[in-house]
Length: 336
Image (cartoon, rainbow, N blue to C red; front, top):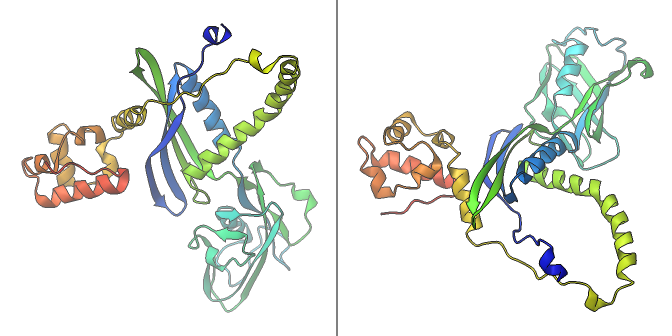
């Protein structure tokens, strides 16, 4: 039979966020596990996801600033600590989130003396400043600073052409990349006498979207790239199917992933996360290292009672470990 001759996948890919933290308003981190893959597949997906995350995710950036009565970017203005060039560099670094695909205008209108930050950017509701403390300039005297900003949403980099701007409008080389960095690694395990793989993805974002949102968007973008190919192939297949009766078409029943797969993924992940991620005080950290607890997986071999029996490991240290495991990895150790 055709069904016997064709290999039908019995595994369904699953993903899980195994670590998430905010290092600052402009740096979010997430670590994800995706499994199970057949041997070689995880590396293929890892390469594609990394490229999609770095190159296909949209972000917002200031593309030019307009300052009337200023003719050159290297001009200096009495009463402003920075040169125009320095102000433009600071504006380039401002992290924004835009819900609009149309260019938007925002404004800075300040009277000094005052320290000017991203908090002073006023714009439409579709534009949001991620870190209002980002520095722009300092007005040292009682003068006004008026800047009109053009904000756009795009992908990658854009190097502006200086020739197409008139006096008073200063182009800014825009960076539309909300993803700061992406790493991936592949780990193998045995399942049903076959070698399977788990893909671990580490994603850092600038705060304008979460690592989980970035993962969703990168996945959708990869799918969108292949939809035209699938649709063109489907038209050819449908024309052939129309020639067959319904009884001629083989039926493939749905298969379900093993209930142990999620636990296996988690266990393997915890073997590769060191207790440094718990950010424990030195005393608790050193005590755990002395009893060869180096990873999160090692810590799962201990109950609360076991921890308190460790030499020089008091109740306070036990509490710190329990809270760190619960907060960062949603882990609760057994009482006994």
